[in-house]
Image (tube, rainbow, N blue to C red; front, side, top):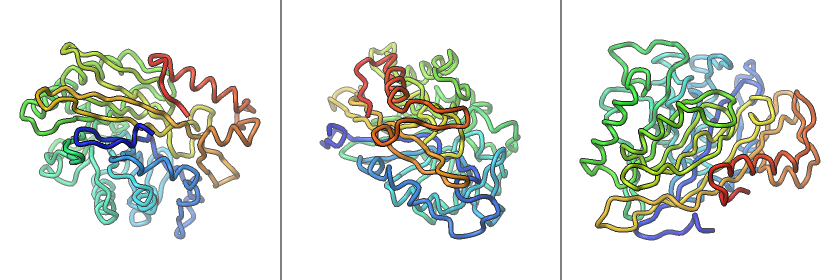
Length: 352
């Protein structure tokens, strides 16, 4: 596969969307121990950790029982999900999302403490001002890949004015300030590649909004080479944005839900995205993002309190229908329709 190709000027990256653990995913809020996620994710373990870098959106704090497990509308999940992600090959999780401040500063600090124990790098929420100023950079195959993560808000929960470093919120930073930061990073040559995790958009919309497109266009023109979108909880068609400099930025507007307890056909379908990132010439700064490939996934509710993720193509081969609370949907028809929609902007987009 092309995305596994390695050279001194190329890296491969995998990204997955929202990991949002409702209580029903891990056995209910009354369950106090023996959390085990490996078996629920075993069908997709081959999708993660096979490229140079793997990133995921952890849309819940994982402080565990220390502050009490909680589900919608304020999430706190078992710490064990972090160990499973690490075991599967995830290198970095973005915490910049609307649920990261559900339990305030305590929830963030305990989550970061757990992630550090696990050995998972994080971005988008921080334990101190100094931590927030540390640019996350991965050095691979001669390239420096930097990450920035932002959320459009925190569900109305106010971040203390003297501790705004806790969360990278667009509400407090503004798109203009993000643009300035991107330009500064590129101007000072701190990275070769800059990837942005962006938590924004309209929930459950199957296509990106005009505001999503405008924000991404601004970040692309400022120097973002790759934008990975989250928040709508459904897949949205990706595209390449051509900038005023003639370069192209790959934008995955929304990677949908990867593993969650949300019910609804498109809320249960997500994807693993793989792509290549290369710097064709040491003489020029331009970066190329090529060979994007989506492998579609499907979270099946086997029974009450048991959710298992599958590769959608495998589910289609073995099951005639997808059953949700809204009815039965022909599996093959759903599979083909999702692929067609995802190719709205890139007609030759590779999709499994």
